[in-house]
Length: 210
Picture 1 (cartoon, rainbow, N blue to C red):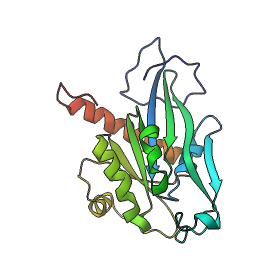
Picture 2: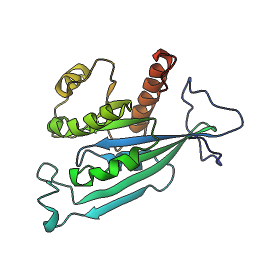
Picture 3: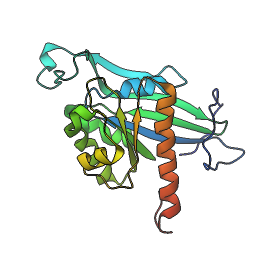
Picture 4: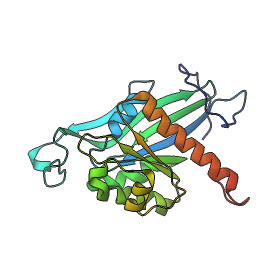
């Protein structure tokens, strides 16, 4: 999607991302993952505007649906989406849309992902099984993604190859280690996704659009 905007304070441009000299290009990226993996934190760490978050307090009535037993500090949950914005140079604006992590809000994923160029899937390596659903979703939609393992104190640290093997991913899927609280770390994940999209675009058959 392409619109005209007044640019926010820019960050360093991403090499190789060609844009028009006259029009600000906008891109939509989805931030996905299981329950409590840091999606809201990720968006908030990098957004140049006050991020929109649809967090709601977790209650006893929701306990059968929102299992926080493995996320002891989790007291709220995203019920619709997170939204943030980041400018790349003066001519690219990236909009970040975070998905809800619970299966009962899965009906929101199609709307949140509509028109996206790609996704960053956050992973807690102590709860790898929770990452299969978002991976299956984006694979079924043909939407490119990268894996970002969020550094929790309780979680084991594995190599990129070990993470790919555990998630049954091909060697072409980028895997990065991040801290979702750190702006530069989050930017690294986003840059990795953009570079992945550029590689896919360069290597795609002429009749395929990435």
